[in-house]
Length: 393
Ligand code: GAF
Image 1 (spheres, protein in one colour):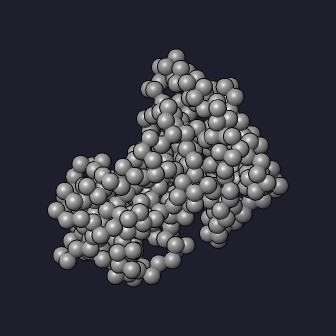
Image 2: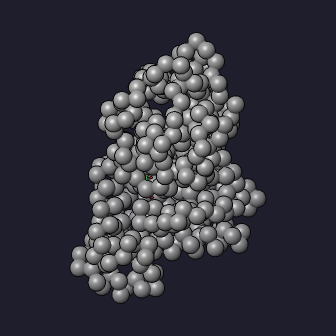
Image 3: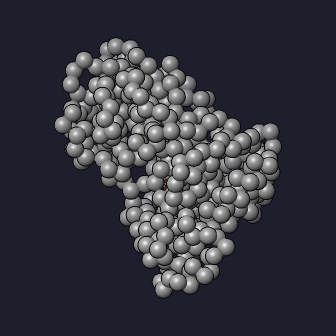
């Protein structure tokens, strides 16, 4: 098992620079990076105007870029193994650029919609954020491209306003109905901290999360489970929450008080909708309780909240799959303080809070259990909270 084999974006940045130079026969003007994220707790709460607590992964997406005198943006992606270009007309109309490049064209579109004079540029993109693992590789891509274009064009766009713009690129250009958590994490996280975000006011607090000092580790286990209907199910959960809020006469489920939960649920006829609401309301409270413990430096004590979050996602929100349930079950049986699926669900990753010295044992036990149950082998790795989007060179 590894922590982060390449170190902080070093070789990834080298590959972006080398890729740029070989694609465009020129050196880049600069190199920018933005991370994927792990959400410590607060799942499916962001689009309910609630609370989330993600931290940045050390793994990042890197963009080497330079301004271009022509009229078309050109983008090469190492992962996709292709180079595409698009002009102003493509960036003016959602849908004209599709696939991975929609996230790049979407950022140009969202910036222009917000009235910015976006510099035409050539870009080379590399990444070591695992794709399709629920670790926000698309937010990392949007955030890295956004940061590069803002710097290259010296655009006046304060950091606090950037996540909504990147989210807009994803919602309205790429057509993915996500909330604002992932872009906020990729753009605003700080090393050694988790980002406590109020998704209604967009107020943030950097909450110290020093695992090393506490002798603890976060073990991430990528279940490698094939994503099952993730897109449609995500949209269905979101729609159920929004219609429940409307039925209850509140702007969003964030407005349902935890101490009024039973009385509120009694006003809803549909059993499934009741369970969806219960997840969101209890999950918001778990985020607040986790933040209290972290502020007091009592990291190990957040374990039961993590585990309760998983049970709520499994039983009430119904977004887990057998592979992630197995990873949680085995991590807990092997001594983890707490464990939960992280991200949108239907596959993806589990995080387990463990003694640093126990990380290998827990990882091996999960790997063995997967083999025993006939699942594809998982990919376990430890992480520490890394930096948000920044210029590297
Ligand atoms: C995905 C979405 F992109 C986020 O906005 C969030 O809703 C998350 O699923 C669930 O917490 O990552």
